Length: 218
Image (cartoon, rainbow, N blue to C red; front, side, top):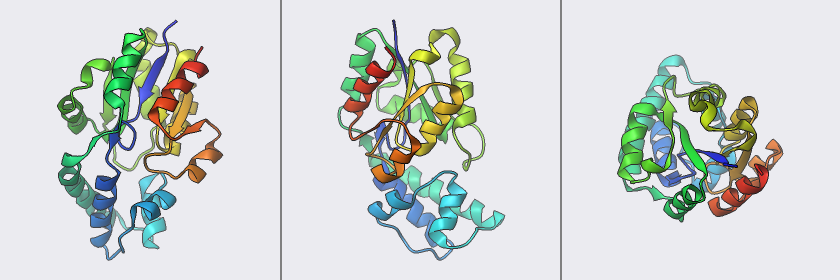
């Protein structure tokens, strides 16, 4: 029986935390906010993003300020992420999973029109049955997108044998909403202490996540 993995992109397959923190600091600066270190970012990060910004800045951004923050982040991230690489071992993990006869797809909250070309640039798009990015507002949560993603995959995947692998608590909450398994990876946006309360397995490498995916979906 085939098992299906739904991969997250930013902070999971793509090792882009330096770019994310740099772009976030550029955004904070537009409203007088102080910069965060990588450690501080990972300790404080949460979804939805406006709540994270309020936590960091100490005030609730207005609608106009939110637009300014988001625009500054997107501009800076597009520049800084050009030097980001895939997380160690990703090409081998994707190829190995496919070689075993299993399937995989990619669901990200990165803008859909930008996601496709980026994934192609890394040469891994052929491993995925489907690649979906965000089509709505940039400050939403992942659950509705996960449900749509799995509906689009249809009978190609079995929910009982599907595992979401991501770096954020929101990935696990989205998996729960869609009725599938989840494994969370500590190398991205959250520290372990902020992932463990979600109640799904937490691992320190994507290789461990893949091993757990095999075990969870047998």
